[in-house]
Length: 348
Ligand code: NAD
Ligand code: UFG
Image (cartoon, rainbow, N blue to C red; front, top):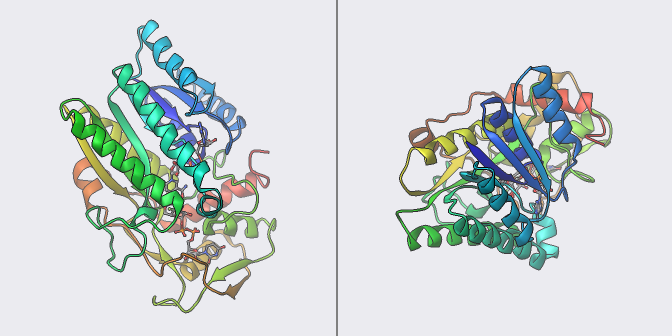
C-alpha cells in the first residue's frame, strides 16, 4: 500500500516513516525541510539497510502550498500503476510563540496548505487521510482527563489553525459521506526518541518544550532548566502534562491507517496520549533517576498561556484503533537521553 507522508522528515514523521517501511508500506515523503534535516532520510535508509529490509521509499522536496509539485506526485504514482491510497498529513508549522507573532504565515502554511492537499487528493481520487491535530485545541479546560467531545477553545493562532483544519475535514466528509475516510489524531506531548539512539527530536535554536530542554541541559548545551511556576493548582505546584513516547505515537498512525482501511467511510477525531499526567518536577526526578544526569533548575514565573494540568482520556483510541501506549516514562527518559548523548548537536 502506497502512502504519502507530508512532513515525513520531521520529528513525528521520521519515526512513523521508519515504522511504516519496516511493516512493508510503500512510502513517499514530501517535505520542504524548513524544520528538518535531509540527514534523517539517510538515517532511515541505513537503519533499514543494516536490518536487511527491502523497502520502498521516495523522498521529494516540496511545499504543500505548491499545487503543481503535489499534483505531479499523485499523477506519477497513478502512471506507475501504484496510486497513493492514503495520506498522513504531518506537514505544518508548530510553534505557539511564532504563531502569535506571524499568524498569517500559520494560516497560510497550515490551513491553505491543507486545502491544497485535499483538493489534489479529491482530483486524484485519494480519499483517506490521517491528520496531525493537537491537544492545544482544547485550550483552557478544567475537566481532566480530556475526552474528544470536550469543547475546543484554542488560545493561540497555531491551535486555531488546527481547529480550522478539523472543521474543513469534517465539512469535506459531510459533502460526500460515502467517500471520505478521515482520522484526526489529537496528539498530547510527544517526547522521547527511537530506541536505537539514531533518531530523535532536533529543535532549531533553544527548545521551547520541556523535554528537549531537559536533554539539552543534561548534555550541558544549556546551563539550567527554568521551571515555569511552582504555584499551580497541582499536587506539587508545577504544571502537569501527558507525555507520550514517540514510538507509541508512531504506532498509533499505523493503527489509524488500518482503521481507515477497514471502513467504507468515516470521520473521527481521536486523542493520542499516555492517559497519565506528570508534573515538571516528576519529569525532572524521573530523568535524573533513569539517566544519572543531574538537571539543575530554578523556579521562574508562569509562562503566558500555560494551563495547570491536562492529560488525555485515551479510551476512544483503545476502542476504535485497538491502540494503547506501551512505553513508560522511564523508557521515554532513557531513549531521549540516548539520542541526545549520541547526537549532542542533533542531526547537524
Ligand atoms: P516537525 O516540525 O518536526 O515536522 C513537520 C515537518 O513538516 C517538518 O519536517 C517540516 O520541514 C515540514 N513542513 C513544514 N512546513 C511545510 C510545508 N509548507 N510544506 C512541506 N513540508 C513542510 O513537527 P512534528 O513535531 O513532527 O509535528 C508534526 C505535526 O504534528 C505538525 O502538524 C504539528 O503541528 C503536529 N503536532 C505536533 C506536536 C508536537 O509536540 N511535536 C503536538 C501536537 C501536534
Ligand atoms: N515547562 C517548563 N520549562 C520549560 C518548558 C516547559 O517548566 O522550559 C513546563 C510548562 O510550563 C508546562 C510543561 O513544562 O507545564 C510542558 O510544557 P511544553 O512546552 O513541553 O508543552 P505544552 O504542553 O505547553 O505544549 C506542547 C506544544 C504545543 C502542543 C501541546 C500539546 O508546545 O504546541 O504540547 O500537544 F499543542
